[in-house]
Length: 467
Image (tube, rainbow, N blue to C red; front, side, top):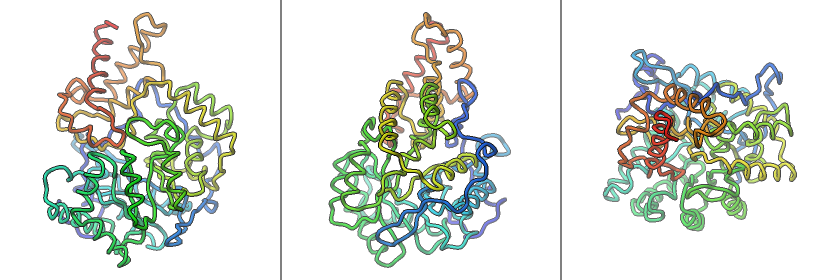
């Protein structure tokens, strides 16, 4: 990828920030019109500008907003030729301006987000504000070059190039929070050692922290708990650790993920701040079945469904910030309200959410968080869109088991019509050949080809009416 100058205008940026449609799944098209779980601004009045809750980083004494901006889902617009999408830089600027004006000061990105363009877009938006008004987090995303037979020097050179590029794209001379990205996957400690120890990359990053170009050094975790425990006890002073935490994963983590109760507990013992990712499980905890919505609304009628998940994620005292990929202004406003200030959960409310999690587990959704790490598919299949459509239909009761189901006709039509609207025919599950290039990249450890083939078989039965 060629280097770009630090200052480019919006027109030039649009020319280079091309994102294929494969990387910009729209998760709000499905069986039926999207349920609105976010209250309208007019219903709740002004969004507070001076009541944000802050937490302090022990090492650098940073005063960090409890709401962090996850920059993996910036808004996009269609390209003029209609064959893909572009980051909408004007919309990104507006969201960043609004967030900072309302107390948000932590912005999390990575070299691999939005096909490599998130850092540049985030840097353009933030450069317009004083450098001491925000904290930038980005990552060493060298997990995609591990396991390819490269020598330690080749991994080192590629990793340091990635590190240098982050500074250029973000237009900064220091990074506030730098992470070893997504450790715990692939072959566990063998992969960790290949990425960071044998290559010398970790030694380099520790020296960069000493030099002040990295102010806080940590890592994000998905996968093998042995890696979590081993890295936590390496004898290195970790300034923070990023974990997946929400009220479903607290005690019911799926796949190879680890219960957040354990992960958070180990960090708390060591007084290491936890940065929280996936508080909504990629939106799944805001788009829950109707009976779960009713259950939550009965307790707090004026609050959004999502606010329950954000209060849960922010309540533990060792949580530094909770990341949310807020594509739309109404989501940003709702989350600011939830955290301005944060009203920690009571013991009774926490138990209520544990019970709610047990009810949600009864619905067989695919644990897709729409992170798009699996994309682009070499055969142009829109993997996230397929899985999200299926999950939406499960939540809405539109996945019939037999033709004898009471709502079979309605559910069949809703699933098939919604499927064609959500996913172009050439990008549907029937085109999966099972190459399995996607599964190793999935933080949730989903067997993606198996799920695509299962969904495709279900679709064919619906079409042929052979359920």
